[in-house]
Length: 163
Image (cartoon, rainbow, N blue to C red; front, side, top):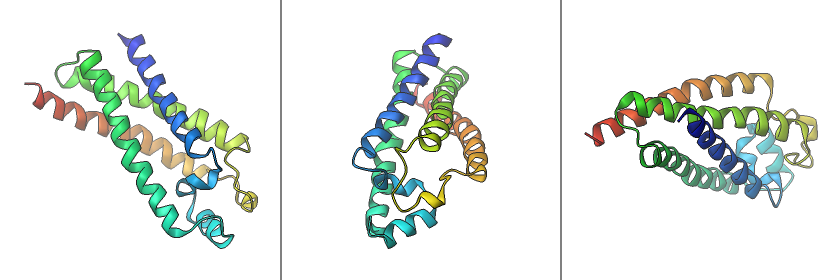
């Protein structure tokens, strides 16, 4: 069961990578909402995008991805793996989300954004690294604590719903 849950986490991480790849296929400026405000402002000043486009792409990203990721973990945990009760659901949700978080931190942020040109927006090269040490600390804390909180909330809701 643990191996299956780990694989489901890898699947969610790959889904994240595919979403990012699709979003930057015409250039990383499409995902500038994930960058610092100063990078966003530079992109607007350079005429690469507008504040409205940034707001809209951020909203679409959240509207599509968050429910999709939550649906994925709930289906894996409860429909595929047959979890029942709080603890059985919590640990599976937490492992799946944590594996995705590790893929996001190491593969996406650490390697793809940090060491390739795929996420470089022309005219903002002097603003690199796009993800600085402070951002990394915040993402690790939010990712770790956030995944635990989300897992607990979902497991609690599902434990009540499946009574």
